[in-house]
Structure formats: structure tokens, C-alpha cells
Figure 1 (tube, rainbow, N blue to C red):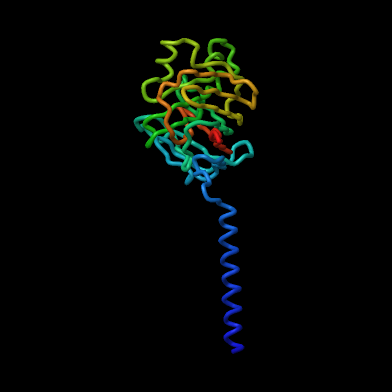
Figure 2: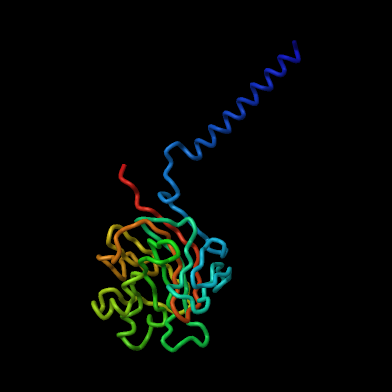
Length: 244
């Protein structure tokens, strides 16, 4: 009789513990919680396993005392050089990151340390929108070069030279940049419009009102150009809040 009572008490205690644990889990992830694509996400970018590489080699590195991800081109690979961040899908919202770019030793004369962020990236990097920086242009003595410090492109179909030839000065602008220095970048985009902010400025340095591709959810990718050594850290993805 006593043994049976003890068994009943033990079973009751176990039920209470399990029920409580379930309630705690539900409190952490309530029913109807938005999927990952609808929540703010942070990526330290200090581990190469966090990206899917296409035409680049990625490795953990410390640059100017800060840990991040180092990217360089990986041979003559067709297409754009990008590292797609896993779990970063986004349709519209904001992206923030710290990045640094500089020409590699022995890089071609025209190298500028090209470094940037691609968004709405489709599988294998075959299609995307992007903003990037030309750090060596930021403090050049030539004003025209300074005016080409930041750039918008859309891949495929709208490389920088096509946009510059068809619409001079519309898809690029000036920003104060130093090769190899960590630079804070923020991109805001929605629909067919996007804005680029540099150094935490309240005003964008480049506004694009006619993104060349139809709006579609896609990943975020780290982008580099020819002859570049680049570093990335502290990526944040902030989806646009859905109307209630």
C-alpha cells in the first residue's frame, strides 16, 4: 500500500516536471512564432563553415585586432566571387556589417580593394543585387576617382561598366574610405529601392530607386572583386516588420 502510494507520488512529480519543461519550451518558442527569415539574426563571421563559397577562399583571421572572416579569390572561377552566408534569407529589411578591403600584393594596377555585400542572392550566386566599395578611391587626389568610391551592381546583366556607360554618376558616389580599415556598412532595401550607408551616417551616400531585378527573397553574401583581400565581421540581418 505504502509502496503503491510512493509510486503514485513519483509519477505525479514526473508529470509536473515534464509539463513544466514543455511550458518553458513553449514560452521560448510560442505558437505562431515567425520563421528565421522574419527574425533579426546575427553572424559573427569568425568561422568559415558559416558560408558557402563560390570563387573565393574563406578562412578565420584577425585583422587590426578584430576577429572575422578573410576572403580572397580562389583561382579563375567563372562568375562572381561570393561567400553566401548560411541561414541569411531576406526579402526586404536592413543589413549591417563591418568590412575591410585592400588590394593584394602584386594585384593588377586597376585593383581598388573591391569589397561589398550582395543581397537577394539566388542559389549558387547566379543572381543578386549588390553594393560595394572601392577603398583606394576614397582619398584619391583625382576627384573623378573619388566619385567612384561606392557602387551598385546587379548580377547578371548590369555590371558596373554597363551602368556607368548608360547612366553616368547615377549608380556610384563618394564616401571617405581608407584601404584596409574596418568600415561599418548598412544597406536598407525594399521593393525596387535600396540605400547604402557608410560609417554609421544618418544619411545614405548612395540611393538606388530602380533595382534591376524583380523583388525576391534570397540570401546575403560577402562579395569581393578582382585582386582583393577582404575581411568581414559582425553581420546583422533585420527583416522589415510585417504589418500587424
